[in-house]
Length: 324
Image (cartoon, rainbow, N blue to C red; front, side, top):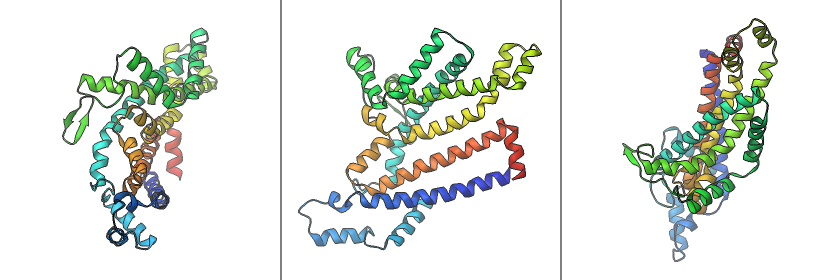
């Protein structure tokens, strides 16, 4: 177990170094940040002084080493646009993104898993209708779903707000939607929009894995022994579908956080995705770079947790890990 964890940690370090290099290199070609920071009346000499003070004239290797060193110490620098510490900007937007992602993931799981089990076990009109609905959910772009929900529930019916977080409550530095009625209302439309695509993936994955497990010999033997169908399906068949399901759930959580940019833009949700879009507009390189590295770190941590869950779920993984 310990060797497995240490090996995964070493792999994670290499991944983060690669991502930091990509983030550092990629955003050096999106434009001149100095031109966005100063007005047209600023002299060339003043612009060069600012560039020198920010270290933009240093060799790229020096800049990269400084960038990685600062990241390792959780020193993210200052925004070129607002002059605020990047860490404060990220922390102020992080709760909105995490709460939106959590609601989207919960929606996808509480609907997708039961629907996947049902369509794997049952045949008929409802099962076919659910499968058709998943094709529609996968095919329609997220922003189209969001616009449709805004028009239906926000404009036509007027039931739900169409932008912003509503009223929030401060728990220390964390601003939460979960303690107010208007906060919950504001979460519904973007949460459903972001969760629809993940829901369809979860449902179809659970259905496919469940059908494969039901074809195995031990399920046939258990059926022949007269084991109760409820116990057979839930305790035996469903448990053996959990390994790939846990994998996709972990990737979904990272994907929801990483790809919430479109949803946050449509609903003007003040999360990290909207902050990233604003940073692109103003060529705010420190914010863009830190955002990309943090998203990669979330994926790395989630994948590490998923790998550890394998040990708890699948004894074959424990056996293989003990021999590696």
